[in-house]
Image 1 (tube, rainbow, N blue to C red):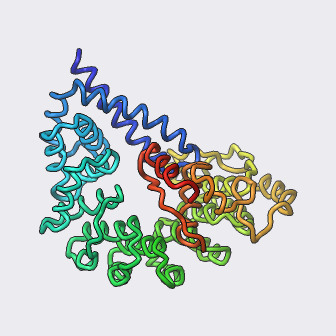
Image 2: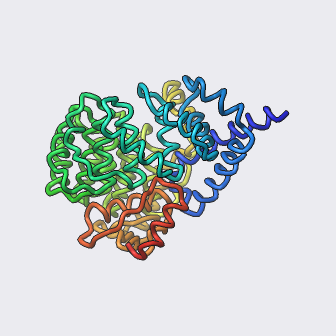
Image 3: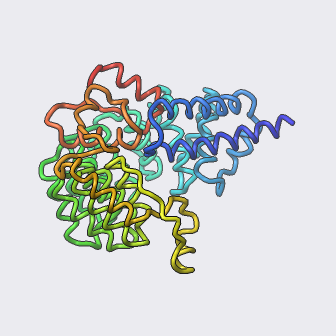
Length: 404
């Protein structure tokens, strides 16, 4: 009976960890909602830590194939025990080849409070010859804003792509504006994921001409990625709307382009999205993006997919298909309410500066977008808020320093 209960706690912790990951970029949840979700997650982790010794030991012996969220739940519950042997188990599990399980374990280290003894161990790992140790150390210590000012250029030259990616993220998180040479190398990395992480870091440290460099990448459609679109929308202006819209011609970037138009948020983007609704492949996503900018609910058409292939492609998409003629009529009556050069969120003018005084406002998605815009473009200094950290830690960062 006890074993069954413990396994239920593990299953619930896995499910809630999965929900938390999805919520971090959600437009349907705010910081208070994230805190509530995390309280539920923490309750299951505490239950496992108190009574789940045998379950944790058995699972820890063989995490392979268990999945990232199971690994997260195991590692986070093990850390809740605050026992040295459990910490050693979790440290060992962070080593090795890249896998969902090692990613889940590293995420647990980021989620949990950083023990001073672990900080010291990870500090030693930064100098390790083992790429997995260096990667874990850079990721966790920079996430916890506890990474010493070690030179990053040697990591930018690492043959291990995990190390190069972790270095790029660490430079951004730690706001290492003195690491221009490392960023230059990382922004030229042949791996698009590393290049994009470096571009994000360059924006965060206000490296000169980064936005121009970001725009130049779009000249080669093959170099565009979903993350490139997100960064351009998060730091760009109205002039970038067309480059984002043209990415709809690349099927693997279509949904990301629609989301980027919504992030950009200019009134000029709304008629673009109405046009996008004419294409059945993008109609649902365009309607969501249109509503996110304008606050105008798109009437549903009740139409069915036009072909078996289209039905197969959209089988799991539960978003309604918009009635495009009805949307056009609505837009004709409301378009005068929207200035093409003003940014909007659900029909209201959007000012990033509002997050300077209240960084907790809005949905997690809008909050993330506007804080990033402030960090990347505001002429005023803006204090860091660790957006992927637990809500309690984010609130503490806000309260410690007052307004951003």
